Length: 390
Image 1: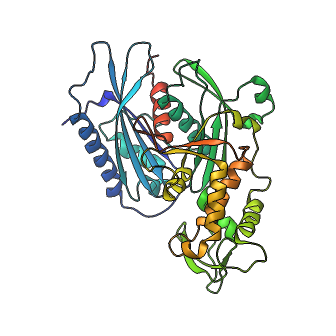
Image 2: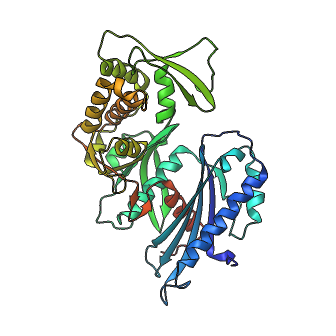
Image 3: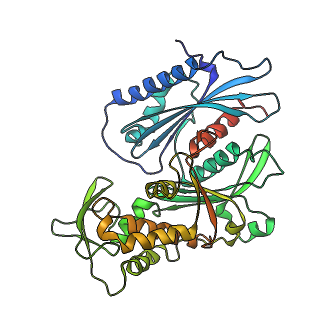
């Protein structure tokens, strides 16, 4: 099946964290071939290329080139004249190690994609900043929940906890609150003929995996000597284990403490977060969606449904942390970082300004579409190409 080139808006965004694993160029071509098959699979599910006389059908393809692999999202959108577009289908594929292995060769990646059957612009391949991830994820959440283009609906906030960084993005409720915020955290952009002004901050180094390493006393990218070990304040004194992070294997052992395990862990986590997070009291009055590791931790513990998601208070995370720390001898064989991770998440959320009684929404999908940044980035890219007429 030949794919009509002009039907596709195309974007490739690399992760802000660059890995340098060697992969042959045939691997890159495999990414393209996999994408073509994904588009064909989606096209075969459709009855026709148009779903109405005046309704335009568009496709967007986004490559999420993260550190653990490339996730390919193929979206089918429909749009009536002067109305907001709708996502009616998504096809997903994943490959490892993926495009992030080529992060030092962005220009060469562009050249390879120019040979694809998709519409490819010069700016379609780039290294993505953390704030861009936050804004695109905010667009995704509000687009899927129906509030993005509805002035009568309050916009949702977004929380994303990745491995290397964490983002918070929301729309401040007043100009007064904007004036009290650092100008570097205020992002303005236009989309669908609307102007949006958001608070968005990305904390590099405060993602869950980077935080683990810091709490253990390690240094990013720095291997230990043969006789060195990292000590864990969040593990039982007799614990000994290994952990691989960013291609480095660390030896880890527990440590004795006068305090309870939770208190010892809390103190170390508090040191890592001290004076690194901006507290924004306004968040308590905004509905927030949280995903990535927030969602994964909650589903792994059975606190929310794995498919449907659910709601949790910040206090639920704290209680789960205390329970995990008090029972680490039972957990540390299979989940050696459970006490640490939950303690970190509960304290991070409080440092961001959420009271313990705050109810957080956790989900992986809204209306059967993934809630990450990929859809928002696709919509922004297509809008910049004037493919979406609103």
